[in-house]
Length: 101
Image (tube, rainbow, N blue to C red):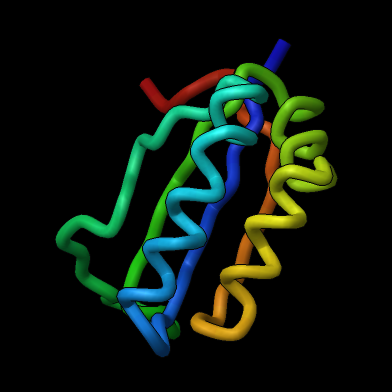
């Protein structure tokens, strides 16, 4: 079964208040088996547009990634985030097909 991912881009309006959102995501992320693969590290944006921070969050399955987003726990965390940031999130299924040789 392919894994699921959240691909996240965010601009912060208030870094201190955003910490409340991060704290509020601990429980839903634990519950749905989330794991950070990328979290606000160094980056280049060679083409297109971008936001200031990025994250890639891995879930055991696409279904778990969607369920986490829809969960009451995450939706409560989202309420904390909305006034202090602008975020784009894509929930996407991982790829398990052929790779370039």
